Image 1 (cartoon, one colour):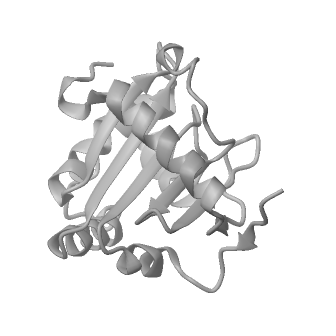
Image 2 (image 1 turned 120 degrees about the horizontal axis):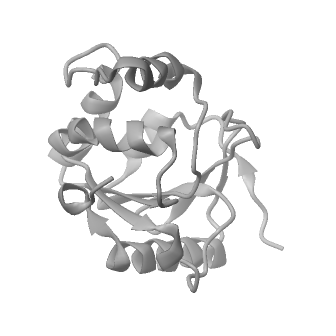
Length: 177
């Protein structure tokens, strides 16, 4: 069985800063309960506001993606989602315009179209086909300590999974909730 190693000491910013060609992100969950998003998501679900591109909510992510893309690194995210979507996915879709504006490419795939795909058990970031960072979540969506792997078999699984999802998925500007 391939070994995973704890994600520390490389920070997430350090991970993306280490990318030279591409940073690929696959999301598999229907909902997330990440602390920094909770208030913004609740406000969106209550009365619909979307954080501004230059807001404190977006500033760290936008800056990271902009500087990564400016170095010539492709940042792509593919999201496998239930249809009809959950409230969280509706929120995520509404705020994705800022991801796109920062230079990230985002596609969506309805889960029913992913049934025949071989997928890893957790969300991940794949950096330059050399390192995988698994984002691990509890059953209620709370983030747990991430894991990473440089095992070639794990990297191949994740690269193949991402490519299979990306080819089937709909670009953000064409995906309707």
